Image (cartoon, rainbow over all chains, first blue to last red; front, top):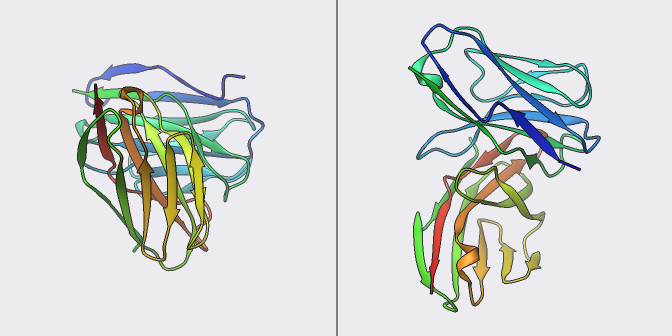
Length: 112
Length: 111
C-alpha cells in the first residue's frame, strides 16, 4: 500500500515549456487535491476533484489545468511554465471531500 | 477570509524539554482543525484532527488541544526524532475541500 505517489520527484523547465505532474493513490479515495508550497507561505490549494469526473478551482488556479483520469489518478498540467511557478507541488487525497487529506512526497519544480 | 497563524516560527529544545506550539485561527465556522508533521524534503504527514472546543487527542509524546480561537500542540519530553516542521490547517463549514494552512513551526530537538 504505497498511499499517494507523485512523479517526477524533481523537474527543471525553461520558461514557456509545458509539463504534466502525475499523481496516483491506492487508498480507494474519492477526492484528490493539488497544492503548492512556497517559502514563507502555507500550502495553497490549486485545484481539487471531489469525485471522479469533477474538478474545481482552488485558491491559486491560474496557469494550471487538471485532469481526473480515473478514481486513482489526478494530473496537473502547466501549459506554459513561468518562473513564478517554481515551487514544491503536493498531491493529496481523502476518502470524501470533508475528510482528512493524505499527502504525497512532492515534486520540486524549478522554472528558469 | 480564513486565517491561520502559527507561533513560534522556530523552536529549539533540548531532549526532554517539554513545550507547546500555538495555532491561532479565524474562520467563519470551524469544521475541523488538522495538525501535520513535515520532514525536510517530504510531504506532510497527518497527526490529528480536532472538531470541537475542549477536544484533546494524543499520540506518543504529542497532545493536541482545541479552544474556540486556538489550538496547541504539546510536546512532552521530546526526542531528536521529533525534529520537524509542524503544520496547522483549518477547514471551514461550507468549504468542504479547502484547507487553510499556517506557515508552520520548525522544531529542532537537540541532545
